[in-house]
Amino acid sequence: MSTAKKEYKRITTKTLVDMKKKGEKISMLTAYDFTMAKIVDSAGIDVILVGDSASNVMAGHETTLPITLDQMIYHAASVVRAIERSLVVVDLPFGSYQSDPKEALRSAIRIMKESGGHAVKLEGGKEIKESIKRILNAGIPVMGHLGLTPQSIYKFGTYTVRAKEEEEADKLIADAILLEKTGCFAIVLEKVPAKLAQEVSEKISIPVIGIGAGNGVDGQVLVTHDMIGMTHEFNPRFLRRYLDLYTEMKSAFSKYSDDVKSGDFPNDSEQY
Ligand code: KIV
Image 1 (cartoon, rainbow, N blue to C red):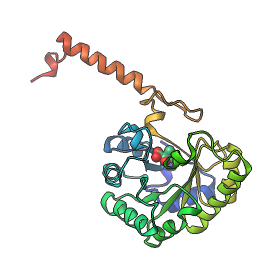
Image 2: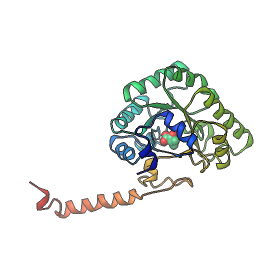
Image 3: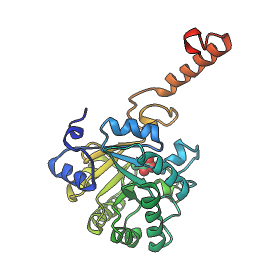
Image 4: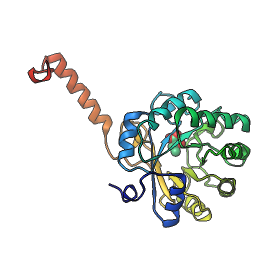
């Protein structure tokens, strides 16, 4: 059991800020369904992200753009039913907050009311400041997301490391400071140089949770299906695989098929 699990019975946004103050790292993983969320929560993971990566790993889309608000709410409600301790953060999907702050607030309210999630996450900095303010004014905690922002993939054209050049790095730092000042409780920083990520983390007092952003930040997030090896074609440098479930599951399924076809399953003790 993790040390954080023993100390904190229930993770709140305040817990995360306190953890940063104490220099305790924050663990975060994705989940999109009840069964997975139950395991992730009971393992002592601090934050469960109902990410719009569900669009990729659950629905098989190439990008995160197609997933809808209704689908995110379905995934988030399934996750919330499973958790006892983790903080549940839900992504606002593409198209549910970009057009204006009122739409952003309406979408965030639907997530909170219909799923029971504890906070929302939005991609972007200065350009979505007014939307973030609106959501926060309604009492809904907001997590920011800077660096590689997959909802803007068609603007950038690639999933390569972001903010390697000074101008983009300066904008990223300014955006992180702005997100903190606006009232976000934490920021996800995706695929940026480790040195820059550390600088951001040192400049702001809210937690910076990295994915492909090195070890100088306040916590780490991975897509669960990637880290347990259920997906096996996605192999970025930042990904550590803790299991090879693709191979394990495939071999279990083919063994089952063999057993059914040979008549070995079910045996005498597996029937009534
Ligand atoms: O949707 C997602 O899973 C995410 C993580 C990659 C941070 O936003």
